[in-house]
Length: 415
Length: 200
Image 1 (spheres, each protein chain N blue to C red):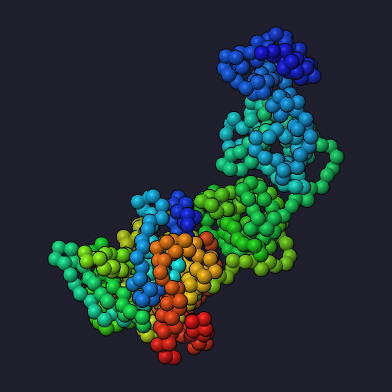
Image 2 (cartoon, each protein chain N blue to C red):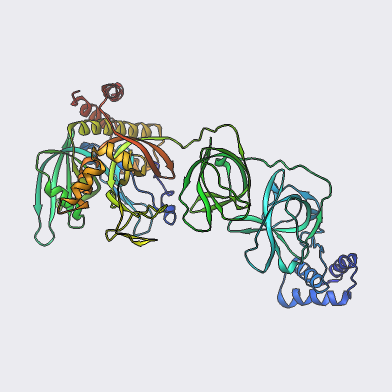
């Protein structure tokens, strides 16, 4: 096999950077890779180029897309259109710089153009110039890689980074929550709910919603990050869309967000289900909660909180966990105290008294509530997340003669 | 129907999907002859194929518990008969379902009961079929709940027949294969008669 043409190409590339390398030496390296190690010629060209570039500490030595001449890599692409496995050149604005998770990474962050945004990673050994947040750059011959199913841009030793001097405006495309895909996304959404923080590094977590759905969000404690106000609408640019167990969440660490006027009618805010309660799960009825402020976890029978250990000064509460079934679909339901009280007719005081004066204790409350609601037809309103229904109101269904007549007609009509 | 086919099978790692409880009259459940397992896993759910056109892993039924009987010496279990406007369901609860067994043991007959359970087809040595429901839970309810159930069961039955007639039932080919001589109109009539017995 003849390696002289490839060697010539590499030599020219290095020559452009002011480094002359003996072509015979290049050829020998190529031959060794291809003939001894069975490396594909295109891959061999890439690795020899990189090896030499590194040896002479050159940056911006593009290899083109494999051995195919490099035209594809030189043409500026839209971030929205690039796919893993490609060599690309893009122009975009660095909208966020993240603290590098490992010493082998020099810099990581998010770069955006008007079509979309992508996370970038610059390896320490790439010796790439550091980019500034808020500035525009042209990134030549970077590799689009995939990590955990999300595309990202790898800046390696062959990648060229040039600042774009002219001042450009960036108007990111804002998506509906229902359209979000893992990667980077911008949304305009309302803060529906705020949760107790579960971690000391966490600043805030909760739920954002718009007309198309809801999504969990989290903000980690970092300088300059502020909490969102519940009930307010925000435009959030360039948040990381993460996926876990098929559910998305938004990490706002990379995002810039602005509070806005106006309101959004959040969908998924109210789901109505008519069905039967087919199961009452353990942990329903009278329960004890951890009294530590902001914890509120359910305690075990021995008053043990998973976080705060034994808590003898627990607080009593009522709840029902179970399954609601309409014959076609099942919903995991959670009823809070007020809903439990109105559905079962038993209030917290009664339940507490019952538990204290009965040999079965808290079990007695569970059994009575089970007997009062299991197998009954109910109409539930609440917020649905996956198959889980957080019930806001739950009432027993009543017999309606109109429905009876309609069904008689339907059954008899075609008989 | 939302659980028909493989999607529910693929969700093992992402949390399981509970099989819904089908509403079916005794007169239809009695006619079931075909039971199958969906998937090769030993934990794959088994389904009884309802003649009106739907697979069924779990049932919800409301009727009158007219009789109950304790059986067995070592392995105690309870059998019961639950009557709806169209016929009789045979239910049982053994020591593998201690909670259900205790619930059943406590109930005085006759009483309106709501039952959630899993149907199984048994064949007696003389070739007769028996469809029995293994109770997951049984509670005493009022007449209104029974009436609501009759409406619900009638609606579900009609929905199944309509889906079968329109060819939208995912298990339609199985129905043709296993119940070739059954006329879905039978179940429409059963639903009508059940509804007619409800007095408002």
